Length: 246
Image 1 (cartoon, one colour):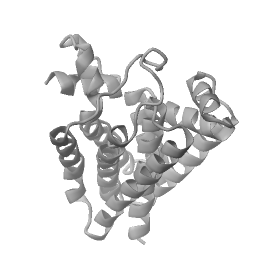
Image 2 (cartoon, one colour):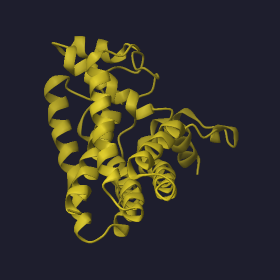
Image 3 (cartoon, one colour):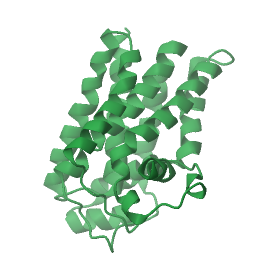
Image 4 (cartoon, rainbow, N blue to C red):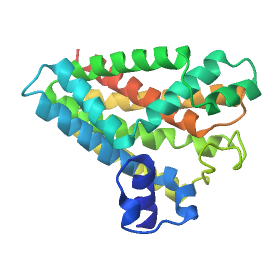
């Protein structure tokens, strides 16, 4: 229970820390239950898309869905994607990349990447009927977080705990914890229409490519890299679902 509360407190703005005091060790293991946070954020965003589709056009409904998740998470992962784009876009070596990612200011690479990301995400969601779109948002959110979480098992942390943004280094997942995370993330996939379920392969491919790229460029991962890996994996799945429906 403590780890679940820690994960929801860490990955959303829900004030669950008021319910129970969370120890530092629980926060080191929040990635194990990242998919559980995906159930919450995906359900909210999917529900907003479904409800808004009856009052507005699909584009507006999709924007409202993503906006609801931004409010719920405080743009945690989007901030990571922007920092990732700035660091790897403007950095010429490992140290420079890490220094740029740690800078709180956003640069041109980050701005452009976020614009492209949201345009593609909104377009993909808006192409789906309300019911399928709502399910796709939930499934892609939870499943992509489950897959992206494996980055901490395949790569070392690229910084030290003292130089980390939040002074936190995630603990690697045990085989049992990793399995539980995959199961939690995979459950919503059964709600997808048969052909669309094939889109679940997309996050696996994207995460695998990110692991290879990060190993080559900085020899590890950071929190920003985790957020970027999740969003890119999720976007790939949403685009794949959209493509399957045509």
